[in-house]
Length: 452
Image (cartoon, rainbow, N blue to C red; front, side, top):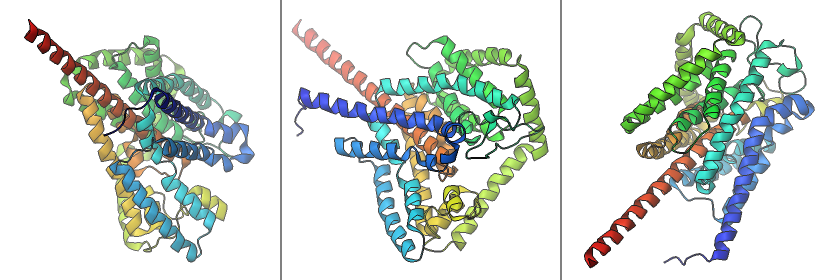
């Protein structure tokens, strides 16, 4: 039987929890400004700044482990077993000549950041989750405005610099670049606005008071960013979020009533946003790019090819792999190798780096994590909280096939999944508390009636 905590221990534990939350805020801020530091502030330190969040992640794991906030769940336990196996694999790869720095970077990619998913679920309170949701929604407007300015500027303008000295952004049609906002490349906005869209939908169904200007600004931000992005992936990334919201309406039908208010708000904002010339120009260029590239047919064909390449990698990769981390672009630059030299898809990279057995095991763990998030999200949606399931829509693709060798993609995969799991947990805690209070009220009522 557990002893009740003393008031002093309760205060100390809350202080420990708040310290980890502050570190999570620092991680989130670095995730947003890491690209700005690399391309505008310290271009000569572009490569070292790739790992600017690593010390923060290490500090979070250290304090969580020391203070009792590192959970012991099935998914995290599976990750621990994989970590032990990968360390043994790295030892064998070191013996066959893979450089130690490459292996350390590889182990960092696989195991340093994912534990934050479970720590976030343990330490974030309902108030913390709400603050992060509002921060994401508030930051969406300046991010979208910055992207619009980048879209309207020359590809050679300083605002369109890429990471590192002499870096450039990817071009779309008619000589326009794909704006990256504060991130290094357009992959950042793709994942950021999926997360922002998920938060925006959840805010519509929040039981707490939300400023209408915040919601209106969020809708305008998502529409503006999608219009000027020149990226099919950004637009496609919004669709799973919308689909998970639709699924939530089937889980809890009473939410459908709020859908009409949300749709009316979206239509009203779209009408206003369409009056901006930069939006109309962005949509025209996006449509042109869709036509030139083959549209959705080409995207589906590319997805099918990715799975074929993964299957071929599983049969051709050496049993011990070619070296953990050796397929990441950071290591490729360090060793003077061509980018994506072991394959452009994530499943190819992981299987070639870790071998067909452990590589596949790690990929299956990532899929297992999606299933776990889905289970918690459905339970939260059943009691009226859409945030976990819409966030799952925003991160499921990144968890399954996202390129975790790229620090930004890894950061968003971890952050959005962690916020989804935290939101689901606080929903369950709140529901259990309400149920307990109701049960207590019924018991006290029966006692009073019995004494009449």
